[in-house]
Image 1 (cartoon, rainbow, N blue to C red):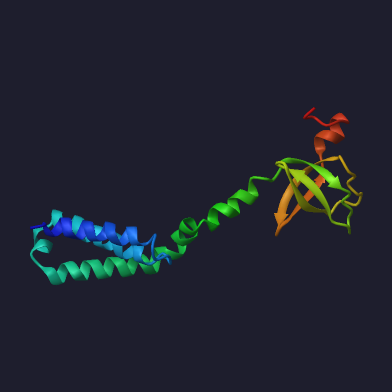
Image 2: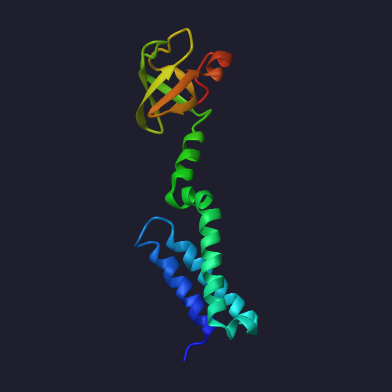
Length: 159
């Protein structure tokens, strides 16, 4: 026969594992509550002897963690937090103009071997083959500006 703490811990692992099959990031918290219940049951004999108390601990810890922690952890598990930080890593990177970019005329840049739409808020247009720096990303467009290195040294610093 399986011990009560081991039952709760195995139930918790099964529930957490089922999160991969049933997305929504809800079942995870019930699994975490079951693992907590298993740990408390193993440590405290009073809890081990009372099934209603075990169920109360499981339901309470699952509900509280779901209500308080889901909004903070859901972006991490969905990957949306990573994609937002990925966009920020481009800031300050160098790119090359493929199509002229004017103040009111979007163009294209080459960044990491791929062509991307780009805009500039500079007063002067950015010409083809000019080196630019990425300021930020707005949707699918990169916002670029004239490369400071090119202005200082008068040439492309990568060559």
